[in-house]
Image (cartoon, rainbow, N blue to C red):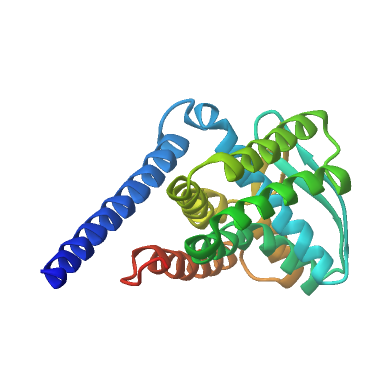
Length: 245
């Protein structure tokens, strides 16, 4: 009898876990579809769009620090575009800093998906702390101060008051959004320029091509492949057969 009850309990747990995974993937697909294909979708989902921009620009800035450069400041604009102002060595250092913004979101997203199953609350608190710390160190636009600060406070509150399953769902949802971010904006990987704060600037892949040579389309394709690998790693951590402890 006890064995039968345990089997039923395990079956119910597996069913609940499967439904949670389906809801998570469906939620991420819905948000990505709204951002990508629905008119005004990026405005409707402004906080998520802004958070993705912040992770992208922080990818530039933190990579610049890793290659021995300087992260001078971070501009966030009302249209949810952003720009990291850097001082980095020319050549490889500059190219890596440009690539850091493109690979930063999928890399961070994959880490979120891996860590969330065991430590959703600490993960969200670290993200909130990173947002608030960036205000002190790098964010200088008025829009950035209000929006990035608001995101940091909101995520800290959610980390504190959401129930366990809610924290896990939210942390994994953010992870999925980050891990898909670069490929979801795939046209940016294959263009020479983009508008930031209303002004036209070279794209990240064009900057890589300028630093290392070769066509920007080649670098865009390489970044897309690396992003795809990170997506597979992230999805496996969510859809794998292992259970959350």
